[in-house]
Length: 395
Picture (cartoon, rainbow, N blue to C red):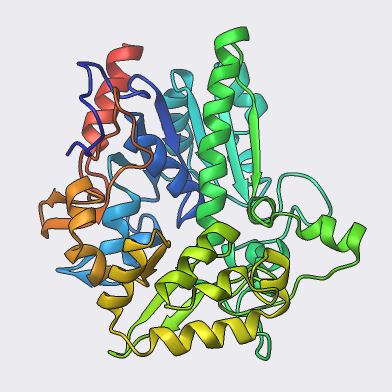
């Protein structure tokens, strides 16, 4: 199913058409990398353990015996089975690796080597192969051997310490953010290595750790500590010193997020609130002043929003050019006309489930858009097809 894009796509294959990817990972970090590559046309061959497959097949909510999480993260991939602890399984992966462009794995460091499929071995078979290795702590360093999950990477990378209310223990996001950030960095690494291969014809290893993928998202966290002596702390729904930017209550029990921390935008908010004098006052007229009085300013704005419905607040703020919006749930997304107009959520046919609504392909390419070809396939669905192709090539 083709995703919607702006503009008219030319008659051209998706950008990664012809790129063959072997996915040996399981759960989220490695497979999310595979999902992103498949969305843009790569032929992703997912290799799973016979009989049980990727644990993601059983995770999350299910309907008619099929995991909805699996439907999304395995979309567009061809699924084959092979036991890498057997010579036959290793032989299959070896045959695929001879003509593959990318291999993605997220085993604990050293596991691939124990299977006899280490990067040096694979490079001898295919010098152009790019091996993307995703792990909790990376392939080197004193922690490399440790088991590492996304939640641990979020904690070590600095994110967990920052998430939550200041008077409560560290919290978390409601999704596996660390794993998915690692998957995004893995996909970017694969694309960078493919670009480098255009110059010299050689593959390389891409070493992605979950904790460093999280660390990369923490802005000036380390510099603030090392140079300014400032330790960033949990601050709930706000960023300290950035005001106003918060969620505010409305008369109908909803919350509206208002982001008016820029001086010119705050002046527009003050007009919208019927108090234009706030926009030029010494107390609130500058970014620094608002940051110093963040809590009292939030109380002022909440006192205004709570007298109006969420719809009225949004209408008033839009008319005055102030960024604002509801805090969406999935139900809101499914009902929203902007999501519908851009096909931000697409419905992909599924043999068991009929149609599965899921997020579309991002980012959007105007000329060579990505596609969602099918939902996550049944275990071993493409065994005969893929093995037949290997036979045709080697026979």
